[in-house]
Length: 385
Ligand SMILES: Cc1cc2nc3c(=O)[nH]c(=O)nc-3n(C[C@H](O)[C@H](O)[C@H](O)COP(=O)(O)OP(=O)(O)OC[C@H]3O[C@@H](n4cnc5c(N)ncnc54)[C@H](O)[C@@H]3O)c2cc1C
Image 1 (cartoon, helix red, strand yellow):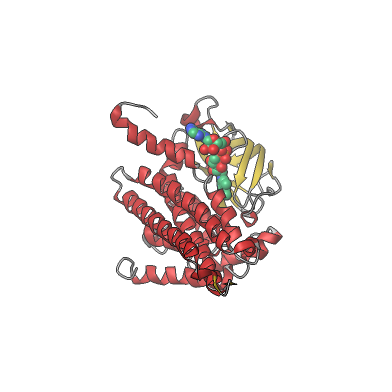
Image 2 (tube, helix red, strand yellow):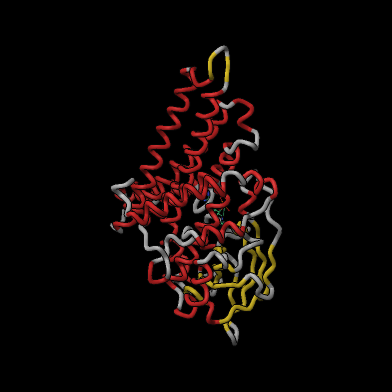
């Protein structure tokens, strides 16, 4: 790590690790039980420079590399994905405004986002359109002062809490990807209704929920990305998002493995400790091998994306597919070696397990990663997958 990262990057990664240890791990089970996102802690993360790792220095960000940002995400997710994911999504929103926003939009949104005082999220998925994002049916109608948005959105991270959303909407119904634009929509905009957060298998602190927009007025000045460019921009950013999901699930798997090792080393059985049984040792050794491989794939995909040589998209698809798969299997193994106690909420492994399953859907499902990989793999053979 020391050779790879600058002193500032090392400092921020160590800060994230300490932050997770002190502020996330001890409280994550309570957030899950109370179905609450710790907004104040998000602010504290902002004060410690952890919220907007990806923002370029000219916009107030720390100017660290993408790999260091991935390590920060890994450290936070090792504490709790429900805290880390909204923070990474917030990061993505700020980065989008830095890349595509007007100077006025940047001045209005970025400084408070940097401090963790304004929380943003993105709103693409709909009840009727998930993987097939070009099929969204939320419509943006042109008005005298700008736009009016009507439609339903689903699976918004921090749906009931976020201060504003980047909403993807169709400006030319029937034109698919060609008409999709991005709008900055404030949480208190007229006609915007937030649905209650979903009942899920876990991850309740992410506060996943739907939104309803009914003729919601959006001033012309709040158009972020215009028709034809909206989905293209989302797809450009999604490769990085997939690489970061891979890094985050590595954090959860690492945390589960450490917890399982601690447990089996202390748990007596048949006059020995559970850790003394070779069968158990080898189960956990396989988890450790898969963790190593998943992190290497995640790092490799970030390096490929940074090189911008056309190999990053497939590398990120491999990383996300593999890391989420081995995290789910590996966390199940960690629970298995802990016996029935592994299912108790006082241990983090069950919480991570539920979130690892959820990670197989967000930013493109496992099957969508296979579509990306198959397409590239079969292209030289003249097959369109
Ligand atoms: C924890 C979490 C956080 C999220 N946060 C956000 C957020 O903040 N904002 C947001 O907009 N969205 C968010 N999402 C939504 C996420 O992006 C969608 O779940 C994802 O795009 C998949 O859509 P879907 O769930 O509707 O599945 P569907 O698209 O309905 O897919 C159903 C099944 O069909 C399979 N399938 C679909 N197409 C194909 C194909 N071509 N070939 C083979 N199989 C296929 C899928 O893999 C899946 O198994 C979040 C989801 C989760 C779980």
